[in-house]
Image (cartoon, rainbow, N blue to C red; front, side, top):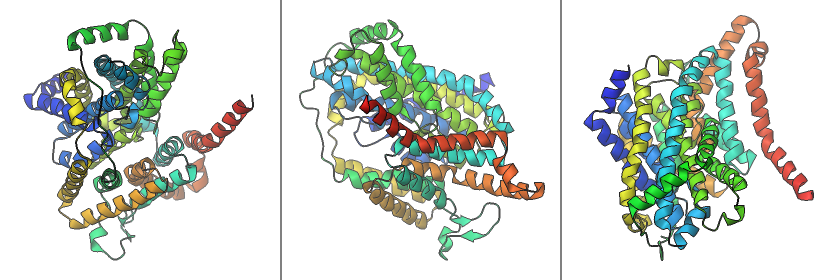
Length: 497
């Protein structure tokens, strides 16, 4: 198997795909408003016609590049290119104002590489044994795992628990349109034959993520990098940041924090970056200098958010619960290819999965090429928003239509996107709805199969609620539902002291 993986990765076409994917992702990430999730959603239809390993490596490379690219605008514009780069702005932009933009950019690149490699090591060693554990899970466990994933994402991403839950269960409801996968009955089609096939995952992902952003981009103004000059020797700065990263334990600690947060379903790079930044600040001898241009702040944030890239796929590929919104798109990619998360991914499709893991390593190494492009980023940042909006809209329509050659899919995609646009205006988060679409079929199959098996065993309650693992999952669900209230109470207690 190792020989097959190495042979696949060393193909000139595969190397070109990795470098191209990193470049595309980096370009998307450095444009404010375009996220890694959106880039993966737009390009997902293209992978439908590719071999599994090629499709996964391409998406993985784009994921790596996009998270890295978001640090560019965070440093030059004080605007996080992706949500994962919020913490990078804390010290990245002050460093740029001091004339150290090059140093900050080089640190963000090297920290991204190291964080990504460490996260990938955990993916390589943790995913296969966890996948074998998934063999012990039955239909009830898979149902509750799906609900747990949505609940965690709701509790973390949404300010309003109620709106987050509504968003997540609307995503689940969308997956019930069409013919039932087990019973064969037609549901929620409104007598439209075009809906009999249901809403494909790709159509839902593109509609919910891309169309709202198209409408929002049309209303935004361009913010230019005025006064920020990228200067200094690339090589001398890179040598300095490499020594700095290895001079203490900040890099390792940030990598471990990012990996742990990535494994938690629904958390994502923004939480990892902020947590790592806060921890490194607490450990530093001069915490008062953070926020004023401290290079350790960039080191912590970029290392942690890139460690999330690989580690967020651990729960996605083993239990079907993605660790971040981009990981949800990656999970959608393997579902579109006809694969299922769990042990079979690392047995029947072992070559494809380890090719993806190897592709992550090469994608992180390819980030070294990005450093030579830093002088032109200030020009890229001024791309007119109307051009970006038109490009995304065209790619969304073409990609949606190409899936089944069905114009009804385009109408469904536009409808979902328009509804989500107004939903976001009202404070409904997108991520729970997307996760609901990705996990909806798995949840429905788990629920239906559990009910059928429970009838044969003489009772629904003992089988569906009484198994040890299901009890643990239900307790976790209740905990994460209560967490926003517990957090608010803790803040009140701290405020009174």
